[in-house]
Length: 75
Image 1 (cartoon, rainbow, N blue to C red):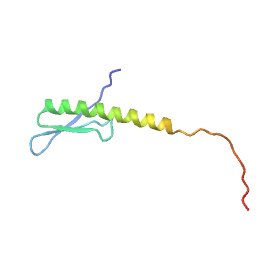
Image 2 (image 1 turned 135 degrees about the horizontal axis):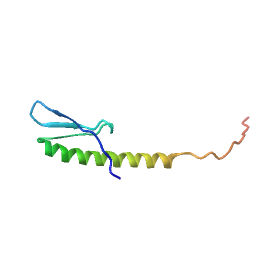
Image 3 (image 1 turned 30 degrees about the vertical axis):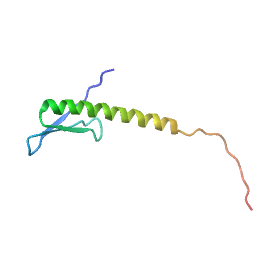
Image 4 (image 1 turned 135 degrees about the vertical axis):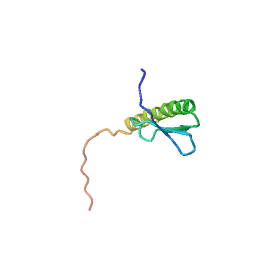
């Protein structure tokens, strides 16, 4: 399934480009040209999505399952 993302592009003081993807927290990249930036940001998006999927999988595996209640007496 194809997903669409927005890339906010800024030009730094050296003339290079920096791209940020607001839909994916912490997803950014840079390039000397716009073409290079777009290639790099595509790779960054793919990696961010991969990490998100792994995190969701880990969280699902970590979910605890209610077993019951026991009473214990300590003197």
